[in-house]
Every structure is written in C-alpha cells, then in structure tokens.
Length: 506
Image (cartoon, rainbow, N blue to C red; front, side):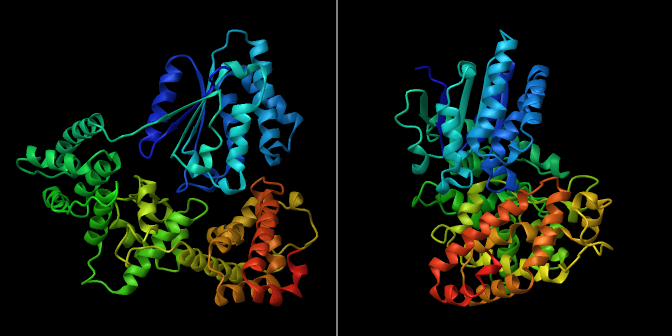
C-alpha cells in the first residue's frame, strides 16, 4: 500500500518544520493546504469542525478549476458546514478532487498539512480521530495525488490512530543533538548583535563572545529558550541588554526535568516583572486573572474586552501586559490603539508552565485552571445580566423574524457589547471546566431560572448576525446538555435542587 500520511512527532519546532515543508512543496509545484491548530489562538483554531471547511477554502483559492468545482459542491449542499467530519470530507474534499483530477489530467499533487494536532479540542470525544480516519482511510480516486503531513507531540491518545498502519510513516524528531545546539548558537550569534540598534541605544563591546557561548549552552536544545531569552534581553521597558544578559547568565541550572532551564527562564521573567517584596497579593491576583483569561479564553480577545471580563481598569491590564513582553505578544502595531490589540502567548510552553504547580514553584504565579474558569463564568453571568432583557433590540414588533430586521448587525453591535457577546457564546464552556462549588451552582440556578430565555434571544440574534443560522444555538444546546449531565453526575445535591426545574434546560 502506498505511503500517503507522514506523521512527525516532536516536542519542539513542529510548526516551523511544517511551514518550511509547505513552502518547499509549493516551490516543487504542489498545491498546498493547511490547518494549524493552536490552543492559545481563536476558538476556530482549536475546533476540528473548521478543518475541512478551511482546507476546502484554501483549495478553492489555489486553482480556478477547484474554485468552480468546490463552489458547485457548496451550492448543492448549503448546510455542509454543520455536517459531520465524514460528510464534510466527502463533499468538500474527496468528491471535488476526484472531479478535478478527471478534468485536469496532469495537475500537480496536493499536500495537506495538519499542524499541532495535539492542540485540537475534543480528543477525548474522538473528534480529531474522525478527521484522521477520513484522511488516512477514506478511499477515493484522487487519493494517489494527495499527501498528508501531520505534526504533533507524541501523545498516547493519538498514537493509537497511526500504528500499525501500512499507509502511514512516522518519525520521532529528537532535538537534543549537537546539530540543534549548533543551530541555536548560530541563531544567537546572528541576533544578539542587532539588539542595541533595535532599541536605539549604544552598548560598548556588545555582545561578549563568552556571554554568547554561555547563553547558547544554557539554551541546550530548546529554541524556545533562546527566542524567549532574546525578547527578555531586548525588553524596551528596561533598555539595558547587558543587565538582562547578566540576569539570565546568573540563573541556576538544574537537571530535574528536560525543561528545567526553560522553567528557570520563565520564573526569572516573572520575578523580574514583580518582586514579591515590593508588590501585594492583589497584584499577583491580577496577573493570574489577566493572563489566565488570555490563555483560557475560547476566542481571541482585545485588551478592552479582557479588561471588562476580568473586571479591572484597562490601564491596569495594560500595565500587567507591558511587564510580560518576553512571553506575551502585547505591543500595539503602529496606528492601532492599545485597547484594540489582541494579546497572545508566544509559545504554549509558557501556558504549560503556569498551569503546573510542580514546574511553576512560586504560588504567586501558578494559575489554577478550574479557579480561573470559575471566575470567568461568574463574570459572564454578571455581564449578561447587566445587558440582557426581553426584546433586547427594542423592536416595535417583537415577533419579526431575524432576517427581516433592518440593519441587524448594526443593531446587535449597538446593544450587545463585545464582552457580553463573548459571555453569551462561551459561558457554558467555562462552566464545564470550573469547580462546581456552591457559589457557581447558585449563580447558575439564578441565571437559568431568570435569564435563560433572554440569553436564547440574544444568542439567536448573534447567530443570525454572524451568518451562523443555528450554529451558536445548536452548539449551546449540545454543550448545555453536557454540562447538565456533568452536574448531575458530580453532585447529588445539584441533581435534587435542579430536578424540579429540568424543563429549563430540556
């Protein structure tokens, strides 16, 4: 059987390799299409439901013939975006490619890239596994023209899906050899001399050769260490690269785990931003809530919306982010107001570090996922209750259909603020990941008993304004059912208190 699927397993460097292979494939005449998963990006970057629609969109943009063929397929199946993985693959990928290679004999081969598959949500529900099954097992005529590159960490739950498979080639990439260290040394030698000019300052004798060598050795085989170190050294808030270099080189090196030096770097970045002797617990709480919201938000959010969700003044949020420029992308592009900028984590390893109390040994910085999700869901309830009301758009005829409301998008934007839009769409997701304590269960009961219909109305308006035509409501119904089942199984007391009102969520 022909080898059609290549899986690259690695803890670091996956996305860089995937992008490089994609670029080389295009140069070689391949039609390339890709989906890069990211658990710190937007909701769509984690959701497997977007994979085949995204791949189809890219294929349609790559060739006029594919544009026509895939366009015809969508016209014949206008609700295909709501279909399951197999039907989406059959309708948007497999059948159109069969038609394409029949009509365009000699057309170039296709490379499909799925990067960081381990960051896809729904692994426990077998959702990404369904996508893999389509790409790996589905038999269609054009399959001989399609190659698939999949990158991921060596997760056990995915390993099952590949081995033993005759059409799959797997490779473990171990970035711990001398070649990796040599690459990092050359990288630092090229980048460090540029820092003073980028900062607009002069540093005599910069950099010292022995310092470059020492930093290279401290980086080991981790490129993310070297890249984070460069951002730390070139911090514009400090404007003192020599001081920052001395701090890094003074770090203790431990060998408890493969990422110990990276953990030391992250701890140094945090301690350099906030000294435990100079700031109070409130500042550390703000850090955990702001950064926790950025990491755990189900969609990418601007600074202004983050501030309203975490209930801090926007200037306080900005002050928090400016201290973290080594690990969080938080500088506003030219012409963009800071409150409109979307901060993001540079690398998932920082999130992993903050969530693991065994690695992030300072409790001031350790972020609890359940506690943060619980805080966010309570804020969602409060934000929605402040805005949602019956006939929220104040329509003269409340029975009018959504599609007949003039300027629906504008009306929705005028009334439903961005943080309330987010709350309406994602509060259930945060609820599922939170601790169902007494405060949360009480707030949930109040919301479902008094605000449920108003929430449904707002969600319907948001859905139609976004062109979803039922996606938001369908997703909410499914997720709410999951939340209900979880609550009943986790807490007998909740089951009793809500059982008489089950019609609320039925």
